[in-house]
Amino acid sequence: MQLKNLNRPLPDLLNYIWEKILTIVWSFYLSKVGKGLHLSRGAKIRGGKHIIIGENFQCGPNVWIEAVKYHMDIEYFPKIHIGEMVRFSDNVHLACTNKIIIGANVLIGSNVHITDHSHGIYTGKNQDDPELLAPVLRALSNDKEVIIENNVWLGDGVIVLPGVRIGRGSIIGANSVVTKSIAENVIAVGSPAVPIKMYNKKLKEWVTII
Image: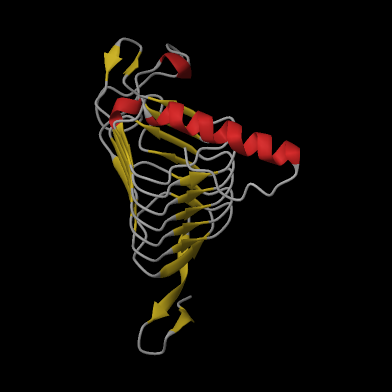
């Protein structure tokens, strides 16, 4: 166990050491994990055999990463892959029944929710009748994925919904809801999130697009 920055107030030092111990324990539960992993207190991971985390991943308290293997006696085959140098702030929740891929150098703010599924089927065939089944008893959808490419920044309170791809270098403003894919190198805000700026490589500056 590698410890750094031990010149801390005693309560902070004890918390730091405890988190290092928890990180070691959780690392044995994951399918694959790179060097430099640090999980903070309150971390909750489910379906670890379906989760890969790259080098130098760090997160704040109460992060919840869940690869759902079974729900209501239905088996799922989830895949969560988090790239290198990814940072999660506090209370980030990933929920996956199919595929969530997060690229390298991604920064995710506090209270962010990323999911590739919903409780129940509301489009296409065999849609759920709200009078027959409570939401918690409905089957989870598993036909979509979420892809977050390299160098993306998600602000605090962002929600990323199923079927979304966020392009390389893009920024999603705080409290935005991403319902559709976002192109690379744009700033998008709102509910639903829409691009408002785009990075111009020739000018080397962010240019307003609406």
